[in-house]
Length: 298
Image (cartoon, rainbow, N blue to C red; front, side):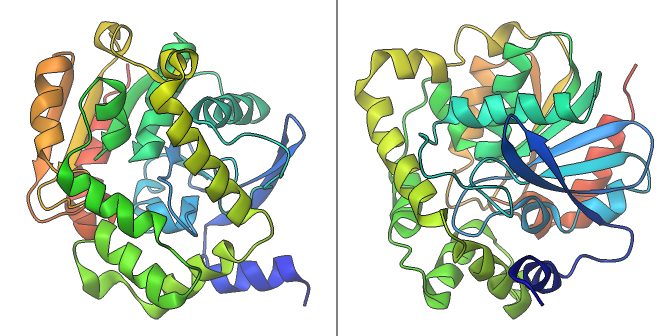
């Protein structure tokens, strides 16, 4: 069995979830999809071993009963190529997302993003007006930062766990305990799947490049201008909804409180018993919220 087949076996997709690859501007890009009908593109967050499937594993089978659900492995993550001659900036990932939906020939669709993935989705929306019908966001400190909300002490502690990842299963578990509130859902299968991806060639380069990008973002005004959403996201008129975990220890709910003032065009909802991945902590409630919101496409 070759490495790719072994990886697919480790990831253990359920029946009806199809694993595929597509060329996106020279980047071999992996995604999973299920269901049919109106397209809903899911964008996962960052962190070691992240992928479309691990980020949205509780949502994909349920949403697929109502929509064509497409979960991308973003640039440098999952089974998508991880070239070692590029900078893994947020804008590079937004551009990759743009190439992905074009390669799939999607004209009008909805976007759903968690954490950094919510930022990528929001930035795609403002960069490509007229393409996205609805945007559903989940617990995004990246959006808060892009709206000028400073990182809190609580989020800095979580960032420390992320940056201290050393490639061991124990470190992976510590990271998952930061972003998943219900620790009973941090199974050995989940740890093994994320560890398998984190061991792929190019994964460490991607993480180091992102660390360098975050440092550059603090001092490079041109990079900051590309990242910033303050003068654009508040002007968006398509329906946008943001869900936040009430027990989020990585991007604490205080971010949500501040964003409600800065983004009066976004509706907000707190899931009290969820952490940073509300879609996996309280999956039944999240799926109900998502189906209700996404079904109202005009």
